[in-house]
Each structure stands twice: as structure tokens, then as C-alpha cells.
Amino acid sequence: MSFYQGVPELGSWKRARRVGSAANINIDHLMASSAIPFIFSAVKINREYFGDGSMRQIAPISPALHLGADRVLVIGVRNENQTAAARGESEDYPSLAQMAGHVLNSIFLDSLEADLERLQRINKTINLIPQHHLRESGVTLRKVDVLVVSPSEDLEKIAARHAHHLPWPIRSLLYSLGAFNRKGSNLVSYLLFERPYCRELINLGYKDAMHRKDEILQFLEITPT
Image (cartoon, rainbow, N blue to C red; front, side, top):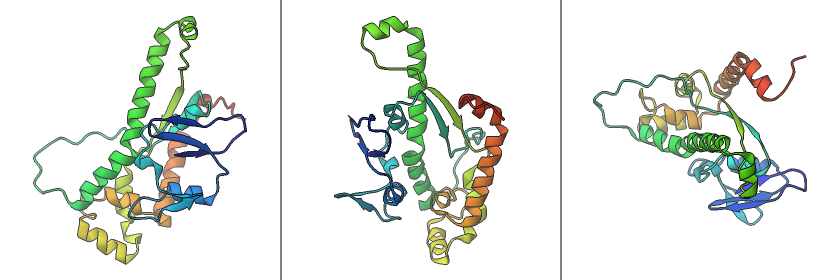
């Protein structure tokens, strides 16, 4: 379910496992969208309880396209420039924290990357088909420009530096799950909302945006003053 708020002309939509519903967005919608199951409580909106929609959002860019966007600015949370580590023999069995981190990544991150690839393939296909053929066939697909801004640093490593700010009961639980081991800190990044960690993320986002300032301004068609 994608709740949206906008002009009356915007229409709702219904696709396989995806529904768009007009609403007056408030704090309940925000809290529901942040409610990771088993960790943060679901929020009741109207007659139903809602949690983080990323769990079942197989096409995260889709709502923006249904609302008429022809350009999409995507702010990622995974360092795409990170060099893949050399694959070697694993000495230790994966901890519960490491496995949980992989599961959360597959839920919250992998679907976005797959959706971006699908959008890029559609753009390439549309470029190969003359526009009059698209109109004559009643094809409603359109080219959508996308700009992806990803963090220049690994958020997992940043979270590991700030894990000591977590309340001690949570630290104790995460320690027992192996979250403080070298490969288990990914889980910490999903649970860490302490101010020092958030401040470092904000500063990193600002630095990365300023590094690509000209590219972002051009994409948004903003002329610097």
C-alpha cells in the first residue's frame, strides 16, 4: 500500500501486490513506514495495521511513476563504489546477526537495484522504438530519467563506530547475536538511531551531494544563483 497526497487529479492505482491510495499524510503514516516487524510496533491507519512497506515493495520506483514523474532522484544507502572483497574460504559459520543483516538487505535494498535495472532496460527499449509506433499501439510506457546518489562510505562501518551509543539492553542482545563481530555490524545499521550516528550520516550525505552538486542541479534543472 502506497499512501500519497497531492492534487485531486491524481488517481489511485492497483497492480499485482501494489495499491496506491490517496490520504492526508500525517505522523501515523511516517511511523508506519518505519515500523520494521518484530522491532517497531505496527501503526493502525483507518481499519488496518501497517508496517514498513519495503518488506513487500517489489517496485519501489513505481509510485513515483504512477504519480506522473518523468525524472526520479534516488538517494541510496549502499556504497555502490565499494570494491568487492576477494572470495575466500569462510572459516567461521555466519552469526545470527550476519544472516539477519543479509535478510534485511534483501528486503530493503535489493528490490531497489532490481527496479532500477528494469527501468533502464525499458528506457533502452523505448529509445529503439519510433514514437509514432508507440502511439499507434497505445503503449503508455515513457522514458524516465534517473539519477542515483549513493553514499561514498560504507554505512555498516559507520554504524560499527557508533554501536556503543545504543542502550545497554540492546547492546547485550546484539552482542549475543554476534552483531559486534567483523561481519555482523550490518544489523546494527538498521537499529541505530542515536544522534551521533544520524549526525554523521547527515554530514556524509551533505558531502556526497556537494561533490555531485553540478550534476544534481542539472538533473533538477536548477540554475545556480
